[in-house]
Each structure stands twice: as C-alpha cells, then as structure tokens.
Image 1 (cartoon, rainbow, N blue to C red):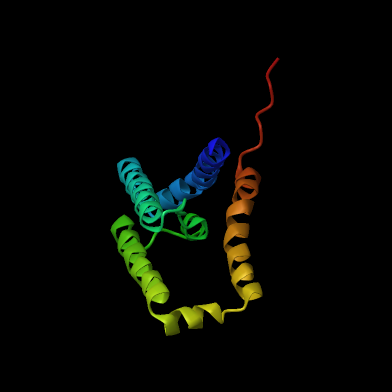
Image 2 (spheres, one colour; image 1 turned 135 degrees about the vertical axis):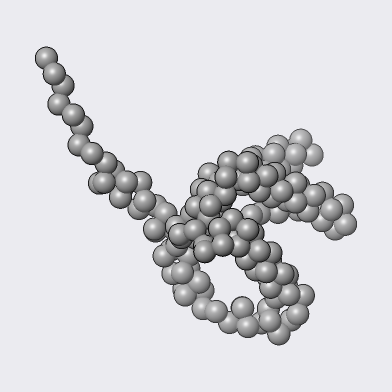
Length: 150
C-alpha cells in the first residue's frame, strides 16, 4: 500500500510539473494577463483534481487526469487569436465538448481511431518542434555581448 501511494504522488508531481511551464506559456501566448493565466491554471488544477477524486471514487481504482500538453504547446507556438484570451477560452470549451462527444458517441471515436498513428505523431512533433526551437531562435536574435571596457 505504501508503494502505491508513493507511486501515485510521484506520478502526480511529474505529470503536473512537466506540463506546467508549457501550459503557462500557452496561456500567455494567447494574450492572457498574469491574473488570467493564474486563474486559468487554478481552474485547470481544480478541474483535474476533482476529476481524479470523482473518477477514482466512482471506479474504485486510482485514476489520474492529464491536461493537454500538445494543446498547450500548440497555443505557445501560435500567435494570439484575433479575439485574444476570451476567444482562446471559448475555443478550448468547444474543443473540450467535441472531445467529450468523441468519447461518448462511438462512430466519432471510431473516426478518430482511424487517424494513422504516424500521422498523429508527426502532427504532435510539428507542434513541439516549434516550441523546442524557440529558445535557439531567441538566442540568434539577441544582441551581441558588449565589449568590456578596461
């Protein structure tokens, strides 16, 4: 029992911290103010925590929820939408409803399952590559160091 609890804590910490920076970058990229980004992260954390508790209690087994790191990476790599942060929030709500429908309506889920794995992985790689290359692009655009005066 002790090992299962420890494994659950490690899983929760790794899952949370690995995506936190990407989600925060995504929120800022779509025009969220620091306050909006903080409230967005709070809403995500509370929703995920509630989902873990409810599903674990209902199914009587440990369940963990995950946020969409690829979705956040796409936001971080994209330009802010025309309507700013409110448009991004509305888009996430619509996408969330569509994803839930794919899980609830079998023919929709079957269509998603037909997407070739290699294609899905290539799309994710394209999104993540832009995000991974961004620090190097920023370095190439930074001004050269000033010479020291003696």
